[in-house]
Image 1: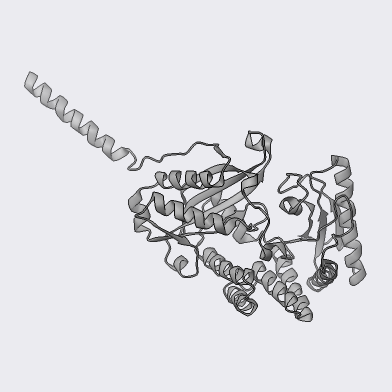
Image 2 (image 1 turned 45 degrees about the horizontal axis):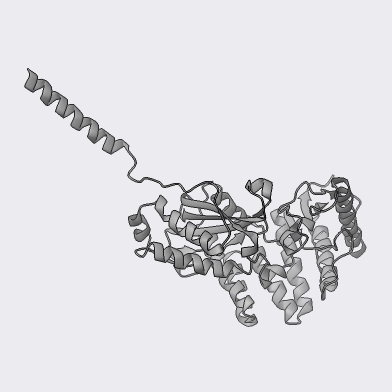
Length: 392
């Protein structure tokens, strides 16, 4: 009897162990610390390269073949910074060093065709009270994403001293007439926030845009123009490609064609429901910034937008915004004055019915950056936004 009892106990133990083997996860996801702060950018990159792969089996990364790595983009404005390319290069090198059996490469129109996973990365300025630590910090988010489903396979969030990262936008983004916060940008942010969104088509267009912007940065104007046209063949109303075409036409002296391109750009944006134009104001003023030929370009932009509104028979809320300098009451009045200035200028270019344009002051209630640095970093907070609304 004792021997039978012992045998039964042994079999029960084996069954329990086998059950445990079945029900336990096959991968122990190593979650990195929630908030880590780095005074050196190379330390932050190394932290990401070490902790990101720990969350997935190495075999899965190897089976994924080449894993494209996208450029770091501004979470708020979709801009890419002067430091984005170097950061991408350094991250790829660090990932390769930490995981020699896996292959990482810059996102391209070639490797995205067969990619199973992709690495997406963003940065954002955060205030000390948001970071929970004194000083100026940038939050870096990096995630391994399954392309087909948009599922996050692994993610790391960390912080780096803002002095270590040149957040000045590249020439393409700095001179773009609008903020390119389109559906592609929204999808990337959503996926980084944990929402599942298939990214295959979006990433193919994204890769084409990256290569077009690279040609633009190298001032290979004819090549860049053709590459932006290639993007439009994939996505006919792509605001980034239309913005690129406008810039090239303006730079190469084809002003009449540039104005037509901006009309097309404003039309595509209005159809999408929003148009965040970079009408930049002097600090604490309703006067436009006095830089280069911006005044001439602003005149074209306002005329094109007025033309679009008239042709499409839509109404717009013209929302003025302010950055975090001065009192709340002052910024509220300033943002409304800026909106009224734009409404007045547009009404001077094209005859419109009353109520087509409605000026609103948002003050600092809808800041996207909120640092109050009053430079290129938070210029989006001093924007004027055009939101399509039902006509009364």
